[in-house]
Figure 1 (tube, one colour):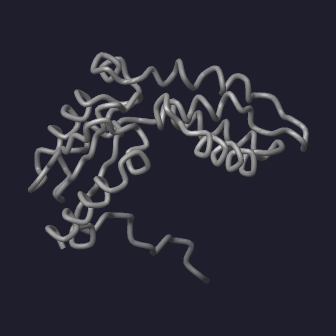
Figure 2 (tube, helix red, strand yellow):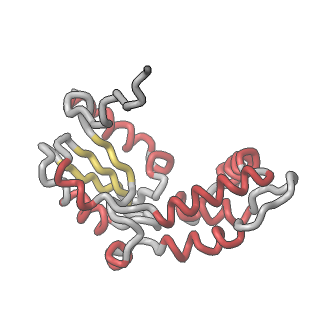
Length: 191
């Protein structure tokens, strides 16, 4: 009789496999009052109206609302989104979020963003080098929050925060040359 016991090894991250972590404009905390006190956005205030608006099934001809996309672009790129950039993302969102399946995926991802858990209590177990790039113009997560977050990597051989003047939340898009140079130097240093 075949065994029904699961013989797979439990999931674990091998320290000899991961050689480093690169972080761009995020938070290790959940969307907490503490993070808002450090100047971060109110994730519930931003996401909840969309979650509520997307709660009912829609017809096959439904397409994501332009206002939703423009709000995301404003949070990610700042106020000065070019017409070309805006049109590209409107077209991309419209192609990806259509019909009831698109509505459901958009609602689920928005719920996940609002309700995600924090990682802070686990960061002292990270034993890899960490590079965190944070933009000064990020409307979602603040420099103060990044300073707090990087300080939690207490067992890392190197936990470095690089502040990017004028960098937006979508930092790799707003400052790709700075981001690429920093990542390249980090990889060369730690591999």
